[in-house]
Length: 233
Image (cartoon, rainbow, N blue to C red; front, top):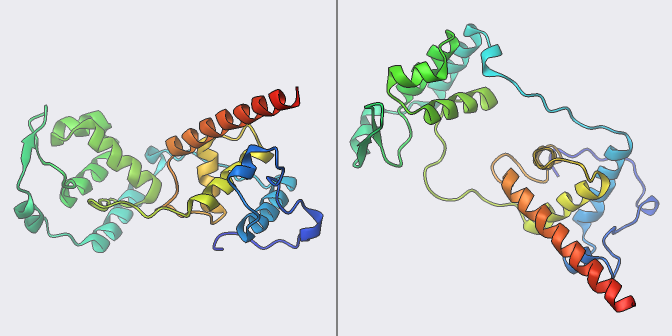
C-alpha cells in the first residue's frame, strides 16, 4: 500500500480486530479483513510513537515574486491550452456584477490565471485584482488558494466524478483514527488518509463527508448502547 511504511510489529501483539465485539456497533459494518489487520498494526505503531504529522498553513503571500513567476512559467509549459479554441467552444456566456464576461461551466482562460498570479506576487490584494480584471472575488481567491496549495494554475477536470476509494477501507481507517484519538479533527483525518496511503488527493473524502460519517457513527453507537442496556435490564 503506497505511502504506508511496514513496521516490524507482530500480529500476535495486537488485537486482530478491534471491532470484533458482538455487542459493539462496528461489528455490524466490519469483518476481519487483511486491510484492517495491516492498517490497525501500522496505525497503532504510529500512535504509540506519537509520530503525528504537523500540518502547516502556508500563506501564498509568503512566497517570493521569483517563486511565483518560476512556478507560473513551469505551469504554462505544462498546460499549453489554446485560449482561442477554448473561447470558440464557449457557447453560453454571461456578465458578472463587475462587468466581466464569463462562460458558464468553463474554466477561466490561462492568460487571466497568469495575470492573477503576477498581480498577487507584486503585492496586489485579491479584492483589487478582482476589480481590475473584472473577475469575481471568489474566483480570484479560489485560483490563489489552488496555486498556494499545489503550485499549479491549471483548471480542474470539467464534468464527470472523481473515483472513490473502496468505502469499507476508508470507513475502517476513520474508525481506527477516532478510536485511538477521539479528539482528532476531520481535516486531520483527511490528511492522515492521504499520508497513510488509504486514499490519494483525487479520491479522498471531503471534510464534510468525514464529518457526516462521524456524526452518523456516534448516533449508531449511542443507539446500540441504549439497546444493549435495555436488553440487560
